[in-house]
Length: 313
Image (spheres, one colour):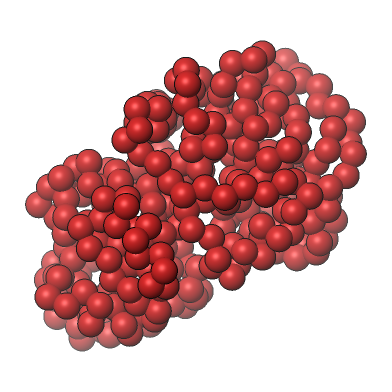
């Protein structure tokens, strides 16, 4: 069995031959079709979240098959955290964590949305509480979570704007259903890029100066949900603007705070996969073979990915 392996944090990702996986009680044998490469996968390999043991196989989610039927690995599997991850040809996974996929679904599309369902659905739902009365700004809208969040928020009837740092990604963001696109290479560019648009909700997966730009552009009373740090680990906001507008800044992380309700998350996952099968949700997809995992990691760090990058055997 071929698997991606890491022997030191921030070291080179290589592909090695390992013994075949053997499921224990309560586990099933999973055959990989596609495994997404998410920013969290990358930060784990760099040692920023040192809760894994080396040597280590990354990969938090995947789609493939169990006994010939198409499945996704859902939340609660522990893959890529409590156990080696999904960037390998076969894996033993907890049977309770698998989600059956609709017949005929495009497995690459299922993998692309799968790693973002938990974050995006909760951003739109119980965390952000987006309604048809809101004007939403999604920072990093061309990325995986941003792409899905735009589509899920549009389904609520909200007015949705997406931000991207590169003009060549603007058409892609519009193709997701965004009502407008703010091309802003820095946080300071956000107010001008939005013009007269003042969002009532902001999904901020970037951090750094982008949060300050969102504060400047936001409507009075707006809520800003900060869930990532792709553009910087520190936040500096204009304090007078922040309290003058009565803004709410909430932190949201998949590994912190109250855990999601498992039944609600499974229902959300099934609804999104049904939408993929019906053509209502989609995402730009690029694929690389397992032995190019190091290149995949580099492209995530350099913000060169539009939509989702997948590894495939």
